[in-house]
Image (cartoon, rainbow, N blue to C red; front, side, top):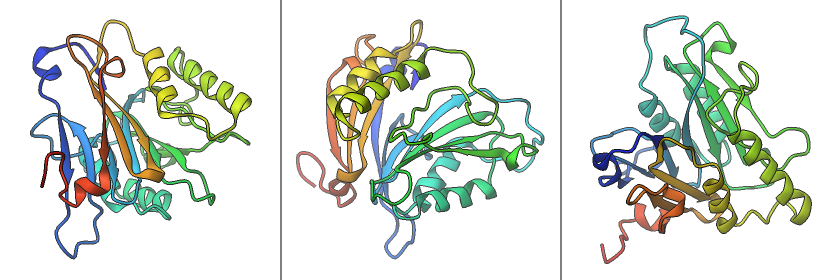
Length: 247
């Protein structure tokens, strides 16, 4: 979450826990953002499905009517997604809604060995192009996927350094030590390596979908979030009302 630094933004971030009403078919979820937001940008639900928003490049929308706020679209997606059917569940949401600007939504889920554990939904308001959404999956035999702030499937790779650096780092891990060796510690190092200049990374999250854990860091004293103290959130416990320090 990279924005120009601002003391009000830096010092007021919160963890949000959304528990659905009893008997609801919606998934509960945990996210990080700022007070008053009722949507979601970065979060994990009760089945370990995660969403993460990335602003992206896109052409002018083909329509300005019937659009949905991106944060509400992401909330609808994370509340609808079950681990086994996450791709289909979220695709259904995206076929019913659209945003005006472009975004890349990284989605991960627990690795069951059946289908990809990570995909990217590249979407925008250009409904003439694949009805506003293009799905990107791991390429070939790759066991990993990288997502940054540029479209790669809908409009072709855009220039930039963040995606090549992330993808190259993942290639080295996979080649040297296998697909299961991207540890949380190494993930934080990779995030530090792509922190942008001129703006501040206000928060960063490393997900462990199989364990239903979120490792979160908030920016402090003008330092990028991945350089600051990390905390671990147990999504199952939080949704059950088991908060640090007591219920």
